[in-house]
Length: 103
Image (cartoon, rainbow, N blue to C red):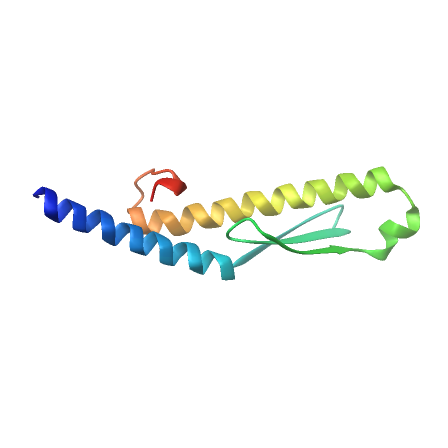
């Protein structure tokens, strides 16, 4: 493969990576903590879209517990979002372990 062909391949990969990133913005993952008392939805681009809190949490007035539940749910949702993005990029790279931001 000559340099021109390799450059064309890199450009093609960059275009495909951009398309995947755009698609990830519309995909979501959801995680919860406390047996479903706090639920968080995150896009494939790690943007938090929704946080739902069961009213029983607020009635308890246990703010530190509520904060811990939110933190746990957000962290789980962000991790699932990263896994979603990695899986999408893996399809593009054919399993080659490239960092997400290099493509």
